[in-house]
Amino acid sequence: MRILFDARKLFDGGIGRYSRDLLSGLSQIKDISLGAIVSRDFIPTSFPPLKRAKLFFSSARGYSLRELCWLGRSFNRADFDIYHSPHYVLPGSLSIRSVLTVHDLIHITHPEKKYYPFLARYLMNNSFRRASRIIVGTRATGELLKSEFDGSLIEKTRVVEYGHSFIDADLIESQNSQPPNLGRYLLVVVSQNKPHKGLSDLVVAFRKLFAEKRGQELFDDCKLVIVGYGAEKLLQPRWMLKEESKQLVVLGAVADDILGELYKNSWACVLPSLAEGYGYPALEALRFNKPVICRPLPSLKEFLETFKKHHSWSPKFIFADDFTVSALTKALLSFAEAARLVESMGGADRVNPVRFSDFFSARRMAEDTLAIYKEAIYS
Image (tube, rainbow, N blue to C red; front, side, top):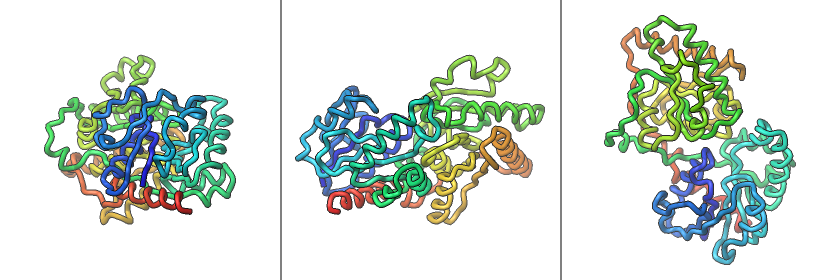
């Protein structure tokens, strides 16, 4: 099978993580030929799974006229059987079967700008009509698609739970990664600083936690560490009051091996998002058997159910009662009290990495996706 993948967003947030994981899995499968559309500044050696792929360099930006009108003409369509877009836009002039992945409907349900819902609906309707198959990461996203668009879309929609090529547990143990010495901290990993990520709510909730527990030794040295590409915009004075400079730590983007160490040494991982299509940080945190504190997102509850089906141990999730700041604060307090009790009984807060079921591997995700490619081509 000859596959052409749109990899222009290879290092962009959640779509980038999904693209890297899927391409890593596809590169392990024999009897497929892989091509990729990449950005002009892409360095082939920066992502080994594409070292044998046929690359097409493009200056077309996401959601642009160049993408819609010209991207589909940048390759010889006779050379490929299927085209895969890892987001909801399909370029025009495609004469081969196509698959697209819809991670969420943030641009409609939680728009950053007023015109986003109108533009997103137009682009989605156009792409959904032409796509042979639509992939979603959870049933919750599929149900949301069904409610927001024509119910007939469900016939094209297939659920492929995400796999992960994130840091191998043995690799973490063998490397001498040196993240900053942060002491005790709650970790937040964000791919982008958008309103639906809930970072401002979390900062308010953490302030309340710190004020509530001030004077208790366990909490006086506790920090909130925010890391990832989405954290870089937070390096602004308005986010951090002078007296909080030791409690709020913004690191920005870090290498994967450092990120793995940050997960491993953390007290817990916090996902304050108001909406998520999947929630990669939860999967990453569980790799190191860390508690996850989050809002009651349907996608995360579904992920937890799936995780339990494939493992003999149950991860610790602390769901807020609702989406208010007060509920998030209560969830943080609940975790903090439980952690204090564990430590008072001599428990340790550092847990070694754990082995995941093969169900969550990038290879399994690639094989399931390959089956959908075949369905799209031969149906």
